[in-house]
Amino acid sequence: MIYKSYLIEQNFRLLVKNIVLFYGENLGLQNEFKNQIKVNNKNAEIINFTQEEILKNENSFYSEILNISLFGQEKIYIINQSSDKILELIQTIETKLDNQKLYFFTEILDRRSKLRAYFEKSKNLAVIACYADNENNLKKIINEKLKGFSGLSAQNINTIMDNCNLDRDKLNNELSKILVFFDDKKLVNDKLEALLNNKINNNFSLLKDNALSGNKISTNKLLSDTVLEPEKNVFYLATINQRLNKLAETDQLAKKTSLEDAINVIKPPIFWKDKPVFLMQAKKWNSNKIKGALNKTYNLEIEIKSNPVVDKSLLMKKLLVDICILANS
Image (cartoon, rainbow, N blue to C red; front, side):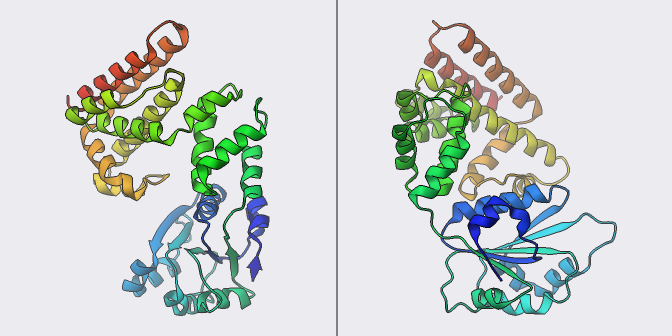
């Protein structure tokens, strides 16, 4: 059975089928649907598989989804990278499910796809096509997310649009930065353009990661090469705090399991490209170090906000040096 993506975006609870297929090139929309699955099933355990993992051990997967304990936690299954290869398995289990929910995700499926055709024709299954966004879709998202902000104009909407290149994931990332930086809900054009300067932001992200990894040589070089804009210090501090809090959460989970397993199960998940750096940082930081670093960021934020004449860029660089030293202590 075919469902329209825009209707499910408006109300995910319209999706009442227990087996659902999401496909299409709009990975940003797919990520939003994955988040909705988590939001609507807060008391459930979300278990992620790839199709390859399942097909390598089908018997184990059957046992996992069909042997449901009456007193156990509800489980939701997300299966990524799905293709026609998994169709036979779906046909085998669909009549044996009780309340178990399975969500299959994949990229583009053409009309010749057996998997897509099976879901479209079935009355018991649901399929949602996640097609690429257009400018109108993304402008609507911007207006909804920034509702109540003063200074929201066609000019800065276009600035945001130009920076995301019709990519919903990039748009959501840019909007997150805007919500943190403009916490007073007052948009200023020149500050918005500076905030969305990818080159500067990417350089700061690299600087932050090297400092948290305790890499003295790279941190020292990047401190010389990176432009730290005083008006973005709140954003810089929020970025550092976000990583420190994620490291603190990992440190707690690692007390019950291995560090690698803790990183794999942490929610929201660490992007796969960031995992090697995050693992390096997690090996450096424990709860006491993290508390010390968070105390430093807190004190710096107070000083920046209470002392307008202080050299903010210099203080930010000193903070990053202190963090690098603390990482190695």
